[in-house]
Figure (cartoon, rainbow, N blue to C red):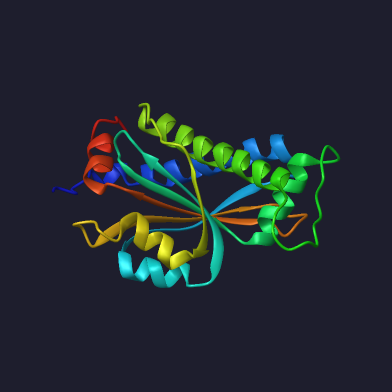
Amino acid sequence: MSLKIDIRKLGLFNKMAKEGGNTVAGHLSQMTGMETEMEITKINFIDIPDIKTHVGHAEQIGISIELVEPPHGHILFLLEAASAKELSHGMIGDMGETDPSADGFTDMERSAIQEIGNIMTSGFIDGWANVLDTTIDIGPPSFIFGPGSGMVDELVGDRESDMALMFDSHVQAPDSNVDVKVYTFPQLDELVALMQQIEV
């Protein structure tokens, strides 16, 4: 597996992160009425055990999606239950039954969170595809509740490679407590091959 890449193309990593993040933030703003923005905090090649430590063991809501075309792999969105509730209320508005203070989620809240997951995952991949000048087909989102580290292990723990590319990004709504973290785990050799085809 060759991971050599023209140094002039390293900026594509930033461009992919920003394009994906801005697309997600724009879609969320339209759907929830909240002003959201994406902040890219870190792009790292990192050992998978270190990613699990970084994500932590606290229970969170996870939305994962599989890339079924190059660069195969997974994307994982992590959010606290309070952030999920706030996003779902922004989307539902006065149309349905919600209780911000109640434990658990109503059927309508769950449905809204599922739709938000669809928006975020498809938006992020659309941004990547634009930068890489390709199409990237994706599977349906999976929703998980549990320790974030366990989700990472489930998605990439059996990889032959010990390393993954981690985009540590946050979708934030400045006027609320919404905070969504985004981690991406593409197959590195396939991602590099796509980048090599791009003129810079």
